[in-house]
Length: 154
Image 1 (cartoon, rainbow, N blue to C red):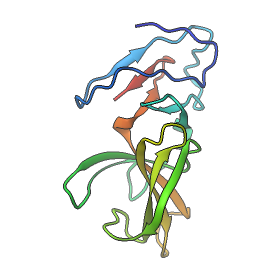
Image 2 (cartoon, rainbow, N blue to C red):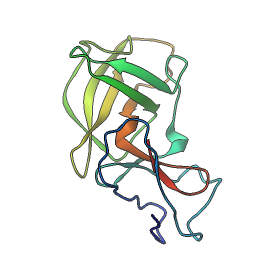
Image 3 (cartoon, rainbow, N blue to C red):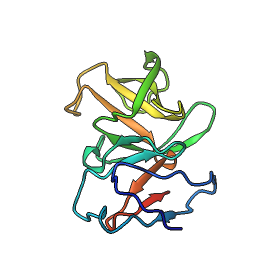
């Protein structure tokens, strides 16, 4: 499937598919492609809003990606990001069942469509991580640019 656009900040919505591991790609017009631009957007899979950028990826506890499970047994693969401008946060910060010692968390949602995208982690005690907050975003709910300028969904 090929869709043209002149705006590199636009992402595309594809039909929802919950099969883990499927990768879909959209070709982006040549004038938009930039294989060295770390500012290409990472977008909400549901509505296409820009959430963050690859340049905002960080390592927490030695890794960018973490496989985590909540008390109900739901397993998520999350990626850590310094910030996520496309997220809004809801709920009172809590340290119950936190995946990162020394951090409280709040639910992170897409500012546009309100889809649950992950969690904001807020420092509650000193530790090795240098920032006060970071976002743990559910990778399956995001669209990523690849090195050829395509948008892909994991």
